[in-house]
Length: 212
Image (cartoon, rainbow, N blue to C red; front, side, top):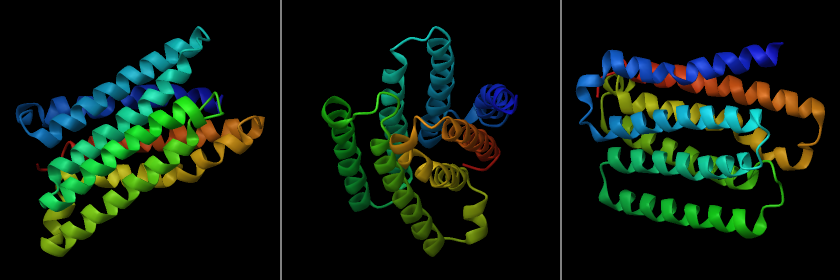
């Protein structure tokens, strides 16, 4: 019962950032960083809808949706960081990391992945990279600007959203391959994963109320 409640709550909360965008940021749609986050939100809504449909018909194509989400989600974040970072040297590093991970993820899916449910190793690498990029951005911003201004900015809240989300799910994904057939773990996995997804959508909604 709890799992079903969380699932339906998650599906509803997936659309919450879009609602807040329409309420607070619709007139600022030319802002590049905002547009990246908007398209990420739209992709998440599409992905959740497709996931629900493919699972309901027990389609084997569901696994490809999981693989694609890892790559697309990572690409959205890297592009967002690329846009908001001020230094060109760091931007070049982000571009290199971006391309390198995509190549790694594709090779992992084609040749190395043995789990038919989730590419947890690639997600673990994705989480580490995003965590490092988030910390790097925050350190750079806090050193060079007024802290109160940073805390009330859209970019800060988006970065914090990713940082909290991937920090919370990192070890969960790493354990998936080893104990994925444990029924008790599967229930805990879905509860934790859905809970952090709900939190992610709440934080993205808050970001929509902040200044650009």
